[in-house]
Each structure stands twice: as C-alpha cells, then as structure tokens.
Image (cartoon, rainbow, N blue to C red; front, side, top):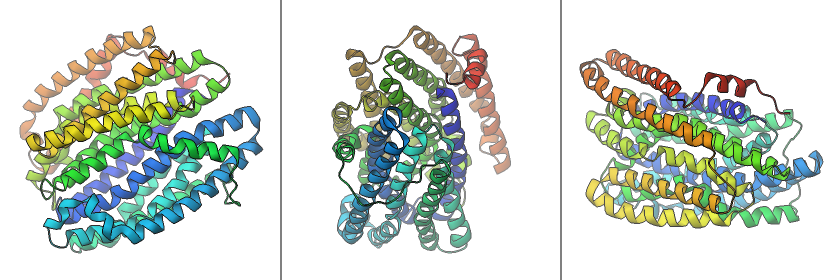
Length: 518
C-alpha cells in the first residue's frame, strides 16, 4: 500500500468533489444569498454533518478501521467480514433510535443550536423545518462511513472518496432543477430535500462497491461480541479527538447566530473555500494513513509506521502551507469571483473574505491533526487525543467569546484556527515523548524549502494582485481570467522555487507513483 498512490486516489476524487462543491455553493449563494434562508439551511445542514463527523467519519471510522485491519491482517477475511456485519447492525440500530429521537425533539433543540434566530420572525421555524428534513442524512452517511472504512482497509480508496461527488451532484440537481425561479424559501426547501436524497444515493453507491470487492456489509442479528464491545468503548473518546474541526465549527455557528443576520453564512462560505485544500490534502492523507499505519504496526514494523507519518506530514505541508498563504493574500478576489452574484452582494463578499483570511491561518494545523491522530488511533489509544482535543476546545470557546466582541464573525474563525494549532502541537509533543514519532532529517530539510517557497510565492501574489486590481473587480469574465492567471502564476512560482530549495524532487514523485508494495 503506497502512501502517495493512496493519497492521490483519494485526493483526486476529493478534488473533483470540491469542484462540484464550489458549483453547488455558487448556486446556493445565487439563490439563497447570505440572509435568513441561507442561515437556516447552513444550520440544518451542519447539524447532521456534525454528527456524521462525530459518529461516522470521526469516531466510528477511527475506532473501526484499526480493529477491522487487525482482523484482516491477523485472522482471516471471513473474520473481518463477520466483524463488519456486526458493527453495521449495531450502528444501524443505534442510529435509527437516535435519529427518531432528534426528529421529535428538534423544536426544543433548535433554540440551543441557533439562539439568535429568534430575533428574526420565522427564522427559527424555518431552521427547524429544514433540520427535520435533512437530519435523516445522518443515518445513510454513517453507514456509508462504515462501508468506506471496509474499502479503505482493503486498499480500495477511490470508490469511497467519490461518494461526496454524488452528494454535490445531487444538491446541484435539487437546487437547479427544483429550486430555480422560486423564492429563496422554495430554493432552500428543494436544497434541503436534496441533502436527504444524497444520503440514499451515496449509500447505494458504496453498497454496490462493497459487494464488488467481495465484502457485502449486511444487517445481521446484532451480537455483542468482544470486538463490538471494544469498538463501542473506543467510539466516545474518539468523538472529540477526531472531530475538533466540526465541533469548533458548530460552536462558531451557534455564537455567530448572536452577532448579526448573515454571520452564519459568511463563516459557511469561507469554510467552503478552505475545505478545498483541507479536503483534498487533509482528508486524503488522514484516510490513507490510518489503515496503513495500523497494518504496519500489526506487522511489528515501527520504523515503517514512523516513515509513513513523516511522509504524510511532508506531503501535507508541501500543499497546505502555500495554499494557506495564497488564500489569505487572495481572499477578496477569490470570494468575489466565486460567490458575488444574485443575492450575494459586495458587502457579503467583504465579510466572507475576512473570515477566509482567519480560517486560512489554521489550514496547516487542521491538516496536521489529520496526519498525527492516526498515530494514536492505529495504536488503539483513543484517550489521549480526547484529552488534547478537550483542552483545545476549551481554549476555542474562550477565544470565541473574547474575539467575537472585538472582531465579530472574523474573531470566531480566528479562534478556531488558534485552537487547531494548539491541538496539533500537543499531538506531536505527546507522540514524540512516547517514542512513537520522530521527525526525520528529510522532513526537517524539506520543511525549510517549503516555507521559503511559500513565502516567496505569497509576496509575488501580493504585488501581482495589486497590479491586477482593475481586472479583478471588472466585468465577470475579466475577473475570472485575472484570478485564474494569479492562481496559475502563483503555482508556477511555487513549484519552481520549491524545487530549487529542495522541497521536493521529480524523481521522488515518479518513484512514489510507480513503487509497488513488496
């Protein structure tokens, strides 16, 4: 299992998903704008999305994959298949009960999730309606996460990584096919039903692929086997350790509802831009590392596990550090070109750009969390990351309450970035003190080159952006062409300087892409 090949498979699908995601968000900004309807949809979509990260991609996958990989590597395919079926059955029962309870309690939960919505007539009721429609998405997508864990442990990454593409395509069809031409409320309703439909589509997609690989995950009579009990014990601690980003976003969303009408939407659109590098790099590296390190440790090869973590950190920094600086420097034209049309005006663009600058400051840290948490999960240590994440969350809440008074919604985004840096630094320190991680000479040498190339690129973009201002804020086609030229030019400068500084070599890339597992 080659790390770069795995990351490339996941990253290419995630990139495709983000492209469709941008198209989706352009349509959402056009039809919903950044007002009450957009805020209601963001809260409705983020609520099941949070629990998806907590119970599915975060906790469930992080606890399930090492156990499944151990069964696959140390026992047999039949034992691994039986464990997957048992876990699937237990997860299904728990989720059906949980979703039903939340649907009933939604009118009482919403005032806590969006306390500021009461100030706008009808906004709280609209958010409650949207949330009830969207929340069953959690059931489907959590089962999708289990199926994804099975496929990833088998070394099959592309199908699972392609599932979010289906989500975005379904939402595009929903809002463009059923919401266009109507009032914002009608477009929001169509989009919310699209969330429900997307869950079913993704579940059907992964079900077919699991059957294709000879691992059809089925509902069987639930059995509390030793492995299922172990899985259950590990899920709750991993909730916080694997899901800091989404928890911080939810906290920020709740507080943003108290700032101003539109603050929730500004943070949402800024986060969507940040999700491109975070998703393509962070999710890809983290998803590939967990099963890889789990199987290396199961085989007793600690040196290989440490090398995998170093190469994951190197690859992540190579892409995210320049991305963070580029997003900060080009925040205004990026937001303007992507979203400023229809109901999304210039004022919304400026407010969203401020949030984007603050979020971009934490981008390398968010990806770093994805790189270093597998070092704990693969060793079946779920307690340490939760302690670290709990501390970072407490800092995030305190900073939110302070910075939002000074900087408004931008303070909420900045607090999230600062807490992410605290989280990743503590993860690295603890792994190092335990002897589970040591940065090798290659990583340290290349980090210097990456930093130098990123700074030079950012300075070049700063001057080029000032020179291109007349085109960046001109007619739509000129704006798109100018931004594209800046992005391509910045990328060319970064690649050339990074190569000259020794941040990477083309020989490394070629060998990584062609190497086969022995």
